[in-house]
Image 1 (cartoon, rainbow, N blue to C red):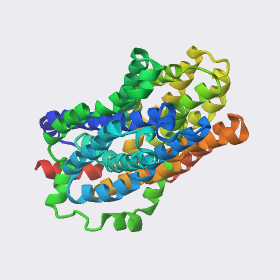
Image 2: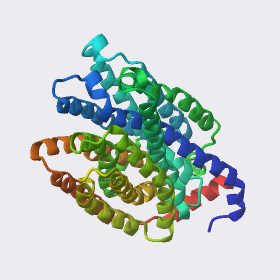
Image 3: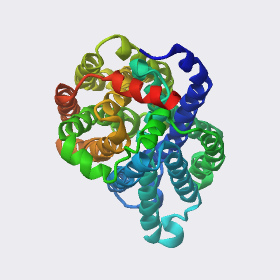
Image 4: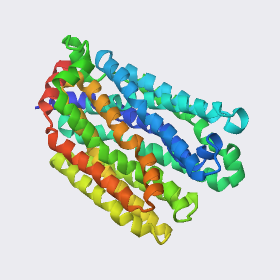
Length: 439
């Protein structure tokens, strides 16, 4: 059983770790989400101009995918270092990489100024964003969960999961305010850059919090016992193959669902329903605000009930909802659009909230950063990376939303397979290491 006296002593450090995990991932996802939204709104015509609007959108979403495709590089490199050098150092580096890349995107000349070089530079910076975020997630999850009670890992690990909706909320909020305050010409000329440049302030704040952190008790114990792995990637692949497969598959459904309701929906409502851009931004804004509450709630509920079962119920709901969502918004009602996106992201929240705990507890503590990072980044390639592009291609090719809904359903079925292969938590592993660290 955990030592309650030790828990009380660690409480301030736990709160700081929770705040650092939440704020750091929120700041990095703000950077990432700014691009996601801009790809659907302005980056196509500015960096990939074409007489056909669909072609420009496809090019922008292809660059969106680069941010996912580069994540495994960050996951491989920084995940390994996280198990060898520790959680704290790596998290400072990943925040700097993503923040600097986003700042430079805000300063980047467009195609009208430097021609095709603008698109190439945008791809390079997007690649750097993905590398930083690929190494970020695994460490952020462990930062809060390895300080907290392992029997309440669902709640504590949800700190990192709140980052995406918080960052998305900030990103969409900034873009929505700019859209209201500026004319269309001003927004396309220079207004979109403001959102990217604001990342400089946010990154400075995030660094201030992370530099003050201590290393987690679990990693401290592993280091003191001389059990740090020398080749963690090879060891994960060879000795923890099934946990890695389970962790990869469980992410596919939530990633695809998230891409539908935060990225592609902006394109769909403007091109198919004739609604203004701000209608979609408002819907995503409201739904992201709801997720700030739903994700920690889902994490906490997964500590009380079977984590895999709760995750699976949400996956089934996520598979069914798109078949109801598209007919619901077909009338062009803004109220129904908001309702539809809120419900869609609620199903996502009840998968994503417990996801960090589920993935991290698939791996032994000494390989946890590497295993979690590999699962997170590799799943992103087959999940979120290609989803907006596939949605656009399927809609153009078939002319109906039914194929998009079917695509989401298949992705959620993949998640159910991952949950079946996964295992339930073993908190005694962490309790033993935490006790050694506190001795």
